[in-house]
View 1 (tube, rainbow, N blue to C red):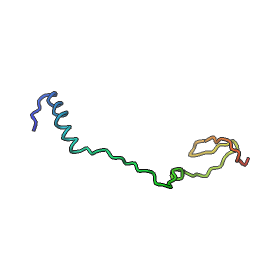
View 2 (cartoon, rainbow, N blue to C red; view 1 turned 90 degrees about the horizontal axis):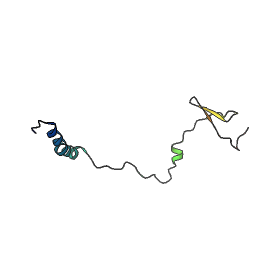
View 3 (cartoon, rainbow, N blue to C red; view 1 turned 45 degrees about the vertical axis):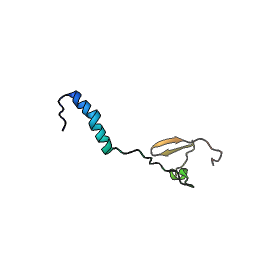
Length: 78
């Protein structure tokens, strides 16, 4: 047990003895959690959300209470 009686002694103990002990005991080397994307995996299909909506005459849709303006398309039926 350390005989610490001042702030200076406490800071010295913290920076030299305690943190060294703590880091050896509780820290681990960093490792990557990322893996390469498997061949043939299409992220556009994985992260796509498909919801059916009706396009209004002014090229807008409503989505969860928001009105979203769609750009005009040559493929539009109206």
